[in-house]
Structure formats: structure tokens, C-alpha cells
Length: 394
Ligand code: FEO
Image 1 (tube, rainbow, N blue to C red):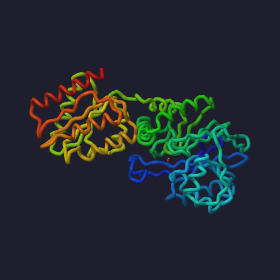
Image 2 (image 1 turned 45 degrees about the horizontal axis):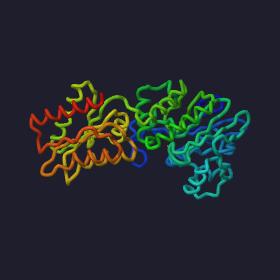
Image 3 (image 1 turned 90 degrees about the vertical axis):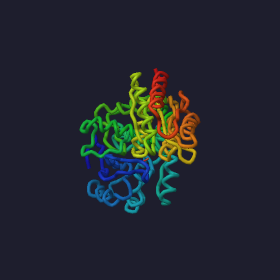
Image 4 (image 1 turned 30 degrees about the vertical axis):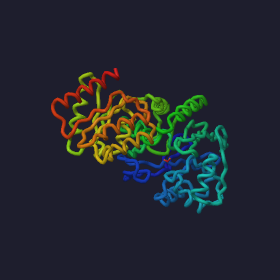
């Protein structure tokens, strides 16, 4: 048990070994943590649990540090199994303990556990007095499930925000002032880009609502990664920035897949054209780049140029996947273009360009494509294509 502030303690689990999450969907190069918290007042409250594989270790720790019989209330901010996975095992030990959750949380807990438990529904603004402190609940729908909510502890001014403001990051230390800031922000924005981007309009509104509550905030303690203790409001400001539809970090991303390097040569020539106009770019081969990392880069990009050779009348599968991921994450509205090589039919680049347009990108150049290997003249045309694209951004 580690003190977070005053009467709030961390009782979570560090998962150093985790490398894939959400099944195998998301990469977690730096592991993750499942942060659970104990609030000790006249009543003792457990906020969230940890993922199921750690249930025995978690409940043993709780029993040793707190005593299971001393837990008066349980708050489930969010029922996804990485946070509620130990609840069934815990409730088998303390079956009558009241559980507080949102309206959607009630349904979600029932559907996950099918237990006859003492569920108490709370909504935004509801308070639960636990002695000197109150717990105030704020619903956080779609950050990132319908059931999500946060719990605010008065007196210590600690926000237990669950997934919001988290990171899949498991350093030795528990607080943001004790870790490498660059690593921390790499993981925070990757988390946002991969998990929260589809809900950006809702997040923007929710951040405005949280700010309007004017609650004094000394600590933001999410359910993954480190706790924001030094300047905790920085991550709320970052979320507001990241939730803007035109958020970008200024560079173009060229993403391509290639069979025999023709499309790769075109990608490099297009990049040369961008640089001639001082537009910085990053280049990724989607077939060998981690998809979660690539989504993060595409989220941060000012504009996207995507290319593939043609196979079976369309692009290679890694580019098709990236098109689907962009659509699913609702990453759109950026300037974009398609390119690629082909053999006997030229649908790959056209398909990319049409898909980008259909999915809400602003396609600024007609697709450029060449048969088999590009000649020097054709590569020069790719440079010109890059220059024209760069000028459209200026
Ligand atoms: Fe960390 Fe939505 O679970």
C-alpha cells in the first residue's frame, strides 16, 4: 500500500510483462499497471480492483494491508475486466459489501458477473459521506465505456479518474514527478490516440464540464500508469488539446507498403518534395511498423500520404488495415493523398485516394501511380507531387 495523499492509498498491481492489451489489439511496450485505491476515513472504501489474473495476489494484499472485513464500500468506476476482473473473487469473500457504480455500470456489472450483489447507482454530483470526506461522483460516459465515471475525494482533493488520463506505462515509480517526462507523454498520447480518439467531441465537452465544476484538484490518479501529482492539471489541458478535431504536431506522415520497392522509392521521392518546401515528414512501412504506434503517428500528423502497390485490384493488406483503423478511430479531416505502383491494372493508389476521401480526409492531390518500377523521370514527378502537396499545406 502506497500513500497517494492524506487518506488515499494505491493498492494496485504492476504488470511489467504486459506487451499486448485488449486481446492483442494494442501494443504496450512499457507494460501497464492496474491502479486500485483505498480511501481510509470513518469508512474504508475500495475504488476499482485489478485484472483477473492478479485477483489472488490483489485480494491477499488487501487482506494483509487493510483487512477484507474492514472494507465498507466498493466503488466500481468502470467495469472493463482490467479493473473489475477481481471483483467476483473479492465479493466471494465479502458478499454483502455495497457497490457504488453508474447506471450503465449496474447493467455492465450484472452482465459480467451475474451476481446478486448490493449495487447502488450514482450519477454526476451525487455524494457519499465516508466521515470527514465526501466522495463525489462524475459520470464520464465514453471515456471510454458508457459506464465510466470518476470519483473525487473531498479534503484530499484527489480525482480517481479510472481510464481517463491514464497510460500503459509501468515504471518503478508511481508519480509523474519521478519518471521520464518524454516517456510518460509518449505513452499518454498513445493511450489517447488508440483508445479515446473516436470519442473526441464527447471528451472535449466532458473536460469543459469538469473545469466548470471548479473542484480543487491536487492529484489525478488514473487506473493505468503513473499518478499526476506535479501540476496535475497539465494532463487535463493536454486532453483538451488532443480532443480538438484539428490537433496536429506539424509533420506529414507518409505511410506505405511495398512488394519490390517501387512504391518505397516513390514514397522517398515524395518525401524529398515535401522537404524542398520545408515540410517535415515521417516515413513508415505499415507492414513492419507496430499498428498502435502507427495510429499514434497518424493521429499526430498534420497530413497523411498513403501508398501501396496494387494486388488483386486494391492495396496491400497492411494499407487496407490502416485505412480501416483511421476510419474506426475517426481520424479524419486532414489533407491527404494516395500513390503507388502497379503491374497490369492500377487500382491500388486510386482505391487509397477514394477511401481517404470517403472517410473524411481532404484529398488535395490526384493519386500518382507508375507501372512496375518508376523511371528517373517518374521519380522526379513524385518529387513534384510532394512539392505540390507541401504547397497546399502552406
Ligand atoms: Fe482500463 Fe476501459 O479499461
